[in-house]
Length: 390
Ligand SMILES: *Cc1c(COP(=O)(O)O)cnc(C)c1O
Image 1 (tube, protein in one colour):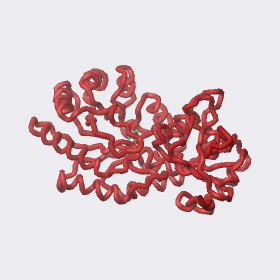
Image 2: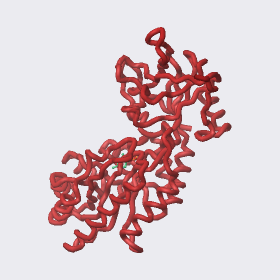
Image 3: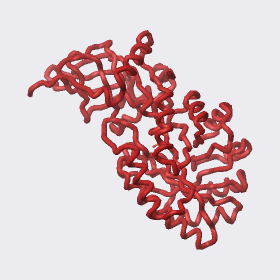
Image 4: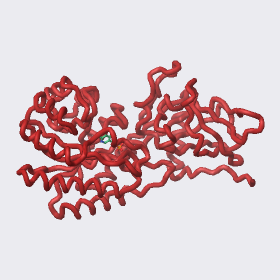
């Protein structure tokens, strides 16, 4: 086999100028750490607004809950979707008004509903009769939106199966909510995170149309559709661009609802913050398992427990760059902990220069979402992933 020189399309992920800045900033800092570029988050927010002027943004805080990110989005005028009272407390302490917050988790304790209500939250997601009963008691009169079950086909990080209910059951729950004095406000779904098949929104929106009509026939006028997250970040597997997502989704909405679109919410998490992050990591060891094994193992100082949990089943394939030159060589990539599941990529072979050595740095792009907040507190004694905001 002929050996090709190592190549990486760096310019697709960062400009030369920006990369210089990142390297300068990183030079004297101990790896691993995450760098989040706030300007990029802001720019992505603007881009979403520009492409989807018909939608109101509720940032899914769990994607990147750093205070600086929240504050920056708050100043841009964003609304927020929280999963817990802890995220709620964080937002309130940063001065986000409760009117700008939705409680999007369908799994909640009574006392947490009561707490959110007491703090002024009046918009809740739900997907079960049990939760509707709790909401009617502890958040009386609130607006509720009902989450419908969708398949996650086409998503790199599926997350729908756990949430939502079949439209027929949702119909019953809507009736129940009305009867219990809540305001049935709208519907929601999540087609799965990093959803690369735009058609998934089409079938979900069609289900919403059916439910809008079913509810209307009982005199209940639903007003809102929450299109969830699922919008793309730039990993190795290609996606359409945001413009195409926006255009197609708008077309699906218009086909079903004509000129009278309901109020539209979106809950971007990944697409807002992922591209703004870079993890800087160092090679801890390079080794072989047997003399004639084809592949070398490259162990980084960041792994599944240090923030890269979305490499589970190799779902998310991060672009990883190293500055060395040399012939391209396929390797197996793993993290530093003593858990054998801490292997990042074995099926999908990443290529690095054959000159890669211990102590060299690698740059893991598109790591601004679902990394630092996922990192373990001290597994094996490793501290949680540090984050710097620039
Ligand atoms: C996680 C989550 C999101 C964000 O999804 P992304 O694919 O990261 O944009 C949106 N809405 C809800 C309810 C979520 O749980």
